[in-house]
Length: 181
Image (cartoon, rainbow, N blue to C red; front, side, top):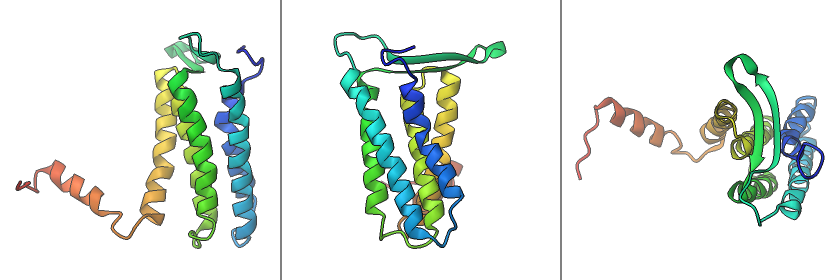
C-alpha cells in the first residue's frame, strides 16, 4: 500500500465514474439536478486529489502512491498506478479544470445536458488514468476511455467548423489534397 494506507489514486481516478452512474439514474429533463450532480462529483474529485499534493515527497524520484495488483496475469498485465512530480500537477490541474469546465458550461450547454456531463466525467476518468498508469496496457485502456468522450464533446458541442480539421486531415492523408505553400 502507499504512504496514505488506502488506494487514493484509484479513488481519484474512478470517483467521476460514480458521478456518471448517479447521472444515469436522473431523468434527462431535470437539467439543474444533472448539472449539480456533475459539479458535485467533479468538485469532490478535486478535493480528493488535494492530499496527493499534501503527502507528496519531493525529496525522492521514486513513484509515489503506488497501487499494484495482477489484472491479466497470463499476459503479464497489471493494474499498476503511481505518480511522479509531473503527473501530480497534471492530475491536480485535470481535477480543478474539470470542475471549472462543468461550472462554466452551466448556461452554455442547453441541449443534451445529460450526455454532455457524462462525457465530461468520463473524460476526467480517462485523463487521470492516463496520468497515473504505469502499465502500458492500462495506459492504453485509459487513453481509449479518454478519446471517446473527447470525440463526442468536440463533434456534438464543438464550434460550427468542428468537422473541418477532421475532413482536412483525412483528405491530406489520402493524398487527394496537395499543399501549396
